[in-house]
Length: 179
Image 1 (spheres, rainbow, N blue to C red):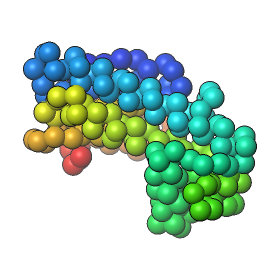
Image 2: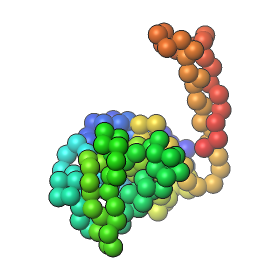
Image 3: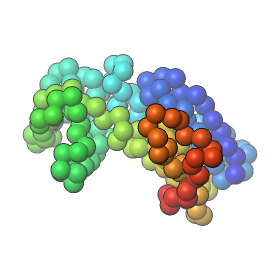
């Protein structure tokens, strides 16, 4: 398995790490496919530069792309499932948007960063498989996506018990988590 990393200082301002199970000639192609998919979807979901999301917010709505519609639908479902603990416009608090037929009416500035990063990681891993990797693990700033055979072990560090002191190796230990 090859490990490829790139600092993503663009819109997402996140580290991108890609691990691939593929021969070297396919790994390069698969890594390129992941980068292209991340860049493409960043142009859809960015809040920090001109994107489909910023245009929808500025115009008060419009016809969303299939990717935007999928993430907006997930945002509504998550808001409902959490009783409002997750909110696609946390600074606003009220109704953020609504679907009106094939269009979306945007009522508040949207913050889809957490959902969008996970969605982009998922799509990046899928792009790696389409480009010839047998398996892929995409880490986009802590949002993980894994596709293909086998398993990956993810370790999560236990949080510090003291809110004023940073966690140290002696005060916490990694705990395995299922991907």
